Image 1 (cartoon, rainbow, N blue to C red):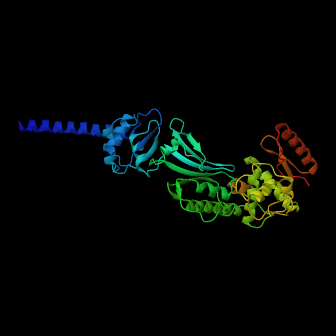
Image 2 (cartoon, one colour):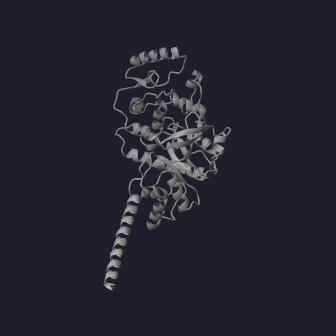
Length: 391
């Protein structure tokens, strides 16, 4: 009898082991396998949320199939106490393990709302935007002048703990414009003692912390520009008509301001390089404009003849060679163009009405291009020629 009882007990024990093993295998598959989510969503972890609360919210949103398995998996993997608050983009079919990993590894928010101070060559604006999970593109909620009235759409979320902040510099902005815009950014702190040297800031997008130090951000921009210039200087073409990286940066800033067409930058650089090699004056309007504005905002009108004749260190119609400093902060592509210009015989260029320029090797051809551009200007009611003038 006892042998029979023992045999039955052993059988039951084996059955229990098999069932438990099956449950464990099923739970592991549920935790690691594709999840039930059909469309991408943003999920939030609030500061101080417990694992139980987060798992219940995920189950309600249809992100995970079973809150208990999610909690068990988090406990088993040692991540139950590692949740980081923020907003996270969860892709369709993401497994519980992938969801948990997103919420614990680094804690960086990957979706939700972001404030971006955009510093442009004409104006600056603060943009509040939110990620659309379906398209993974940011959608603008509201935009406003940082020096103007703050809209309620912004003030209502300005203190949200997971709100991210960014500062974006357009290529061709001046150092004064950057400092002026940063001083108006309410989400940053600290004083800026001096405007950084023109050309020394690297355009681009920078993530910042709420209350981040303005001077520290400028130092980061300066370091990035210095590294870019040093890298590209080492790979420069031979026989350039400038001897130092600083002179190349001046040329890059002129190229940056002369064309908004990226593919034209090496051609534009070739015109100015050819002029320097032949001892011709650069005759470029953006340098004259900088001499008038000192980089403190845009001119907002065409140049006057008196300004074109006035002798300033930046009037390349009356001075020889390069101006004494850059006239803006050039981007990487313009620095590259200045250091590796196209090989051409071009000495002139003028706008062609398409957003680009018509290039010429002779004054006669250039004058014909100018006449075409003047006809386009006349039809549009404009007055500014732009480009390199004839002699």
